[in-house]
Image 1 (cartoon, one colour):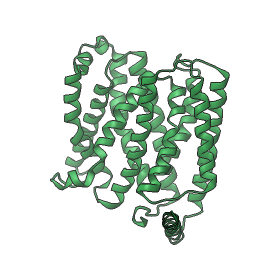
Image 2 (cartoon, helix red, strand yellow):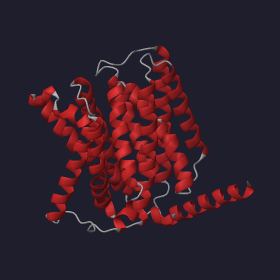
Image 3 (tube, rainbow, N blue to C red):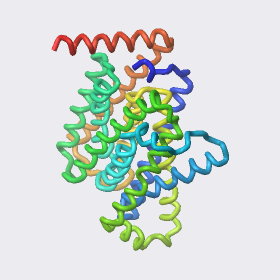
Image 4 (cartoon, rainbow, N blue to C red):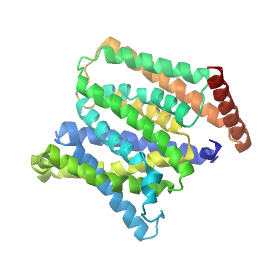
Length: 333
């Protein structure tokens, strides 16, 4: 698995992580405005708009030779699978949960992505984690459960969507890292072919479910503010996906997830005062604070370990040691 861990400079790692954090924060706010404030009826059509924007931008960039990625052929399907399925699953469940949950509860329940990412990296990328990281994840999960248990706006459908979104996000991050390291599609190829392969089936799904008709009949299309917000969220959909791929390229899948957790600290507390849909309770606030504290501790140990492995040879040694430890544990069982 050393092939997946090409070493990059600290500046590239931190700048790509900051870019992802800002993009994730902005799209969460804009999606919330479109889906909740304006009550846009179709999160599927919003996802389609983001996919089409991604295709148009990358195709235009390729024609201008600003970016480069391989031409389409049958091998692309094999190389990129299962990313398109994870891509659309992440998009749709993320938009659905954004619409149905308050910003603080959305960000709290998103913390399960960290636990799922750790588990998937163990099985898919064969990595192990220190006790400090494991304990901080436990704190995050405990805080999440405390906060969610006192949610006065409990909605089983919304909770189902957000937990599915956690799974799709974790799987997307892990497999994006794997594809970037092994299949040679490149950052732009992964983005472009993800959108190209899945956009037509998604459009068909929106037609069959009646979502497309609801979107077309939406009464606020003539509202300049809504139109600007809708176009902005389409553009931010591309920016977010690019930032995820960029962060995964320069960092690990786990670090990408950690950056999302750091961003959620700001979103959760801002959401208490902005949006008007947060219902305060002390258990909820306590759980939220425990969750955020665990996220910060987790982030500290993750970036601390990264800083201690700047030397490529040392990093290769750690990866080999982790793999041998995992193999010995499997052998003991």
